[in-house]
Amino acid sequence: MIYKFGKLDVLKDSRINCVSVVTTITIRDYIDLVDQAYANRGGIIGQRDALKTTSAIRIRRRMVTDIKQGAVLPPVVLGLVLEAPAFTKISGKSTSIPEIKRILSEDHEDRLSIIDGMQRTTAIFEAFEGVTAPPTRMIRVEFWVADDVGSLIYRMLVLNTGQVPWNLRRQVEVVFRSLVLDLRKNIPGLIVLPEKSRRVRGGQFQGDELVELYLVFGARKEKVDIKERLADEFTRLDFMEVADNDDFSGFFRTALQCLVDLDSVIDRKLGSDIADGRFKSGKDLFSSQPACVGMVTAIALEVFGRPGTSRGEDEQQKKMALVRKNVGAVIRTLENLDSNAAANFMCFQTLNESLPKSRSLSSIGDSEREYFLKAFQVLLEEGEKLESFEACWRAY
Image (cartoon, rainbow, N blue to C red; front, side):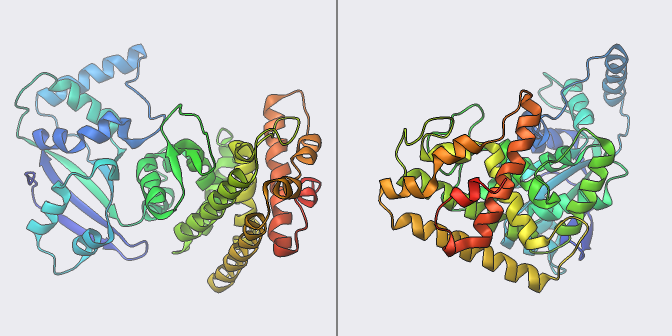
């Protein structure tokens, strides 16, 4: 089925390898096009539901009435991440308009996100709820099309900050499902758990945990304060500085692959009840989000340098190659040990005894992130020379 689009205005953004397609579409086809993304609340974890204040309800009722009476709404903005062959077609100068319409009409499942216009879309759905044949009049839509989720995130951060008053985390979560889809596809051994599912072995992570890892990797900070506005603005600038690199998404995939591989081998080689305390078995280490954050941040700092500094792309590539080498050396060491020797190498008892202690849950979380950051910086520094993880656990 090819939707009834109006005239297409297509512009290629060569800076971030993204395509903007501005068009119109019938309300009937729009409802069908975004039905899954809307069911997922725009593809945004935590996207706001219908506002419930008295004034908001009145405004909403007015919008629904206006839509029924034929009001023209501002364009809804949709983000679409395509596979490379489809993106090559849609971004090519020789591609025909009918072919672009065909690609936009395909079933994109989790690749389509409502970036701007969730409340307008809700009003449209409410206006024609129960109507078997919604009207065929047109509404305006802009598609942001890319083959890499990083391009959409960079565009939101740099080119759309004046229009979208969301914090950094919310902007990344807009394309959350596309990001997770990309990670599932490109990282062997990664299992993204359904919401509220418990982790039972290495390599398993919740989707929202991956979003946070993406944030701290780009910000190069183990603590990303998304509530403090000033801090968020500085974090946004730090994030943009590294996301500006065409290799950023690839760097993050490599960092996450290192985490997944190390997590899996520790779980596989260590038994259960190997220590007294919080960390008792192999899967426990990276069941801790502060541990995951610490490792990913350590890799980001190693590759990109500290916030406020910059490194050339060649140096970044060399640094990432060294990260892979050193993490790989530790993984090979564990692979060659039996379970008892692996347990001795990991030194979980030392870890349990040296963890920072605090009465405040918030401060203990921050302290643990810093603790694990220091620990994994030692791992990256020592690599094959690491005699045991005791040096890591005692670095704080």
